[in-house]
Each structure stands twice: as structure tokens, then as C-alpha cells.
Length: 213
Image 1 (spheres, helix red, strand yellow):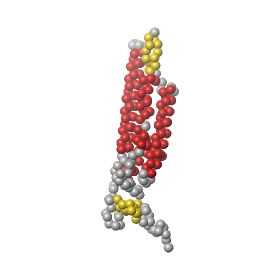
Image 2 (image 1 turned 90 degrees about the vertical axis):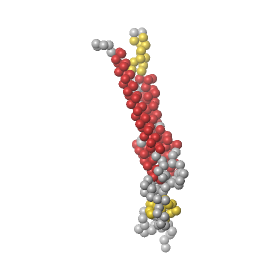
Image 3 (image 1 turned 180 degrees about the horizontal axis):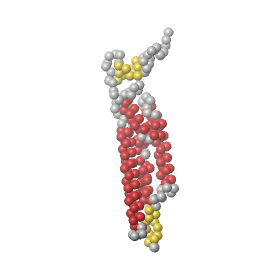
Image 4 (image 1 turned 120 degrees about the vertical axis):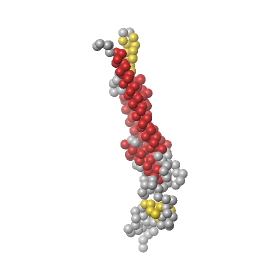
């Protein structure tokens, strides 16, 4: 005689199936029996095999916001420290003038500051992704997008948002849009920094090179 929890021979795999009670919705089959978890209809966002979250379950954590916003810090620091590290004051003919050192960020204090901050931000994003993953599990999300994808940067916020949206009735895409916005902002800041740097270098060189040389 089989126990109540014994697997049913040739039973379907756990998942969402049409409700046998005839409600027209879906009901969760755990591989042995029908459970109390039911859905009013087949949601196109529900990933196979994941139970929807109860209505009102928070889908955002402080960790995911840190994950998507921290990558802007190194770019902002580069933009802010550029005037201090790229220019140095020299004395020419008894007069002080500013000259450009285009290699000041390579091997100088500013270089190591930026590299160190970049590694620190990367490590923090990985740790915060793990904390976000753990919190999603605690809130009832089955098999959240794995935190290890944070090693690939934007992949974790994308995968996390897709899965959370699926189990939360369409909610949960905000971190994805914030992450994309941060990437766009970082690109714009980097482009502005590059344009300003090139123009300053060209302007300095044009003032230092005598005409007709």
C-alpha cells in the first residue's frame, strides 16, 4: 500500500495545468497531487513551474537598487577627478601656466584610485546580487534568477526582472529600466569626458607649438 506522498506512476511533472475542477484557470500539480495554489487564468508572463506570488508581495529590495545604480560611480569619479589629475602647473619664463599631461591617469594616483574603485564596485554588485537573490527566496519566489550572473554585469538585472515579472503578475521591471538608464548615463558621461579631454589637449598643444615650427 502506497503512502500518501508516494509518486504516482507515469504522473505528469510538477507544473501548472488546467484546473480539473473546471474553473477555467490553472492549478499547480506538485507531481503527486493537486495543491491549493490556483491562478485565475493562463498568464503569458508566468514561467513554467513557478508558483505566482500572492498579491501585494514586495518585489523590490534595497539590494537590487544598489546593484543597478552602483556602476555609475567610477564614471562619475573619472569625470570629477579629471581636472585635478590631467593638468599640472609649470613655470615658463617666470610665468605659471597649465599644461596637459595626457598620461597622468596611467600609473598615477588617479589611475589606481579609479581601478580600485572599479574592483570595489564590482565586488559590491556581486555581494548585493546574492543578498537580493536570498531575499527573493525568502519572499517566496521559486528559483529566482541566480545571483552568479552578476559577474556579467547587466545580465543579472535583466534575468531577475523577467522572472519576477512572471511570478508577480507583470510587476518587477523597474530595476531593468533603471539599469539600462544607468548604462546610458555612464556612456554619455564617458563621451562628454572624452570630448572635453581631447578639446583641452588640442587647445593646450595649439598654444604651446609656435607657428611655423
